[in-house]
Image 1 (cartoon, rainbow, N blue to C red):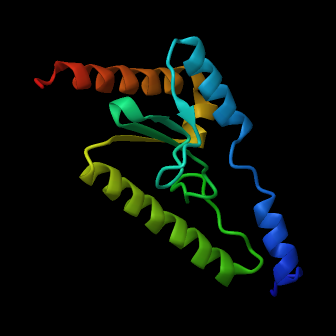
Image 2: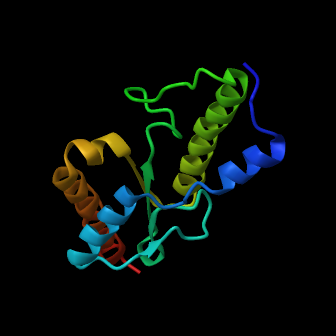
Image 3: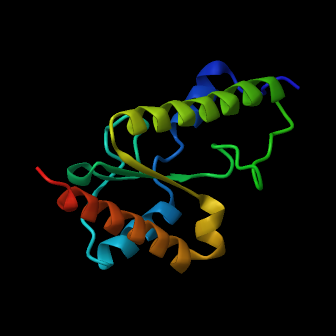
Length: 143
């Protein structure tokens, strides 16, 4: 089935998609209350949802749809060719971003949207423990 929108209309719709979700805001508020200080949606490769540059930590909260979750990801039935290409490129980009940060010595964590929805407290604690663990690493290494 062909897309029922013009290229300009589709572009406008795609640009209207917010870079922050309500779920991401809940996570960052919870982490802020725990005492963590960080930047949101930083202008780094892949635009991490949470970044602590001082400790070389980046955290991504991946949407099940946009990042092709193996459990909950689904393929739209209309305009299938477009979506297959688009979502496959997202998966490849995620791998490229992971490789980039690992090669630069950064600590990277990806959390699925469904993990936060299923058990918000446990997932937020996982993120907090990841940050604590890698903050210690920075100070335990000899200069």
